Length: 270
Image (tube, rainbow, N blue to C red; front, top):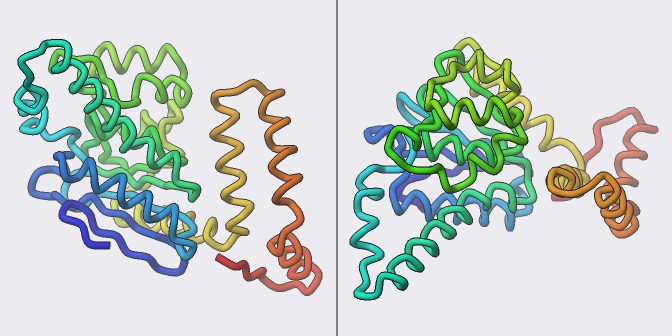
């Protein structure tokens, strides 16, 4: 696919999506918001793409929402009727939320490789991913509090389930910077790498490992973990029983068992 603000390439089952506005710190303008959703919808619908890696070009991963876009909101929602103006703003916020939720909706695992700044809307973005990895120079910040607004596209809903309620409140209330090392300590990121090059190499290796697994089983595993986050244990157990009643007896299961008996690596259909 052709994008203005992203690049996407696909190699041996791993799709690498790069935020590509390096001169602007990969700030998320209106075009990028729409293209992120298009990219992950494409990934979801493309059988050859088994896992995604999201990263940023240039000095920073992402410096958050483009401030020119934020400043232009008043004109975008302008209406003689105050109620209609506020409804337009609500619909705009819901659409931006949906853009980030597209990472969760994507049936393929999404890994994020974070270097440099990860600020404001970028934190909302990474909270939607399956796994997060960082280089030691990474800096995380819930910046919305410092520009007089409440973060509204996912951080306040997802972050507490990643790092706990108390720590999420501290970061959201203070807007302080968090290093890559501290982010690992609070389990915001899975692992920290010494350099950006080591980060990219390490994340690609993890992605390649996932891409070699049964695609059907990986999709089911993501579905179950995501469902379990917002439901009871009993609900989750019931759902996975229903899922496996439908999906367990597959060509992937046969191939995995046959490969094990033949002492070879399994080869799965996309």
